[in-house]
Length: 344
Image (cartoon, rainbow, N blue to C red; front, side, top):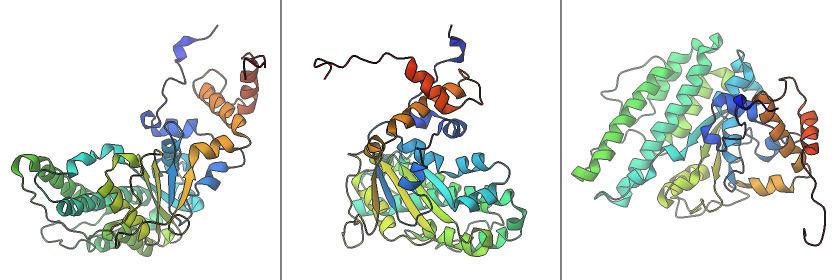
């Protein structure tokens, strides 16, 4: 008899509702290491990941993110990241509320500049938080952290009035404060029709500059690729997507991008660089994730393993169970429909 107290392991269907631990526990690779082949996070070539709802975009991108790298590698985080060859910076557009950056008595050019600055601050915080955590777990990096912090602060165009910092986490706190002040100005703009903002960084300066400084001052990170994993791209308006497209086109090493969105979610491929489009094949590669999975010759085995992994993690099978053995047992638990012309 089934023990219903364990709950339904298939009840949650959205990867955004999973904890980091669940993302790691439920992840199943395509036979033959397919996902690393499909969406190689170590590659400097940007990648656009298109797919319908439930195709696995979010699960895959979160699996490549630093919190999951940390879980996978346990206490030896630095060597694990070095072995994987990248540091994943995950950003979900769904939490941005992109509609705030429109109208309210302001010009499109004003919102373009404010949105770019807002994103610079957010991306910079995500990078600094990840590397700060990495530094805490690696004594060989801690002695040069202060120098890297000072150089990262120098990337701001106007540092007057900002407290000097000696740690990456402290600098991240400063940027968070600037972002909160920007939030207040944006939210009140609907009432005041004024946007009192001091932009302290040019577009791309923090996104590319901070990884460059960190790689220069922290020698252990010299061969690391900083990968911006931008998820739920469909939530950005067309002008906002043009900003991201421009970053993608003008990217600088050691940075790259993996952008995930619904099939209909890519509203434009234009950039702010002379109004030109980003070109597939030369400036980015495209992955139709759901089609790629369905066409895989071992797709059936992959889906069976997904089901088996959920059952094992939920306690319906012993933790050391073989996924393929559970998958074979599942195949025997369902009736095979009789083939007939009516069935066809």
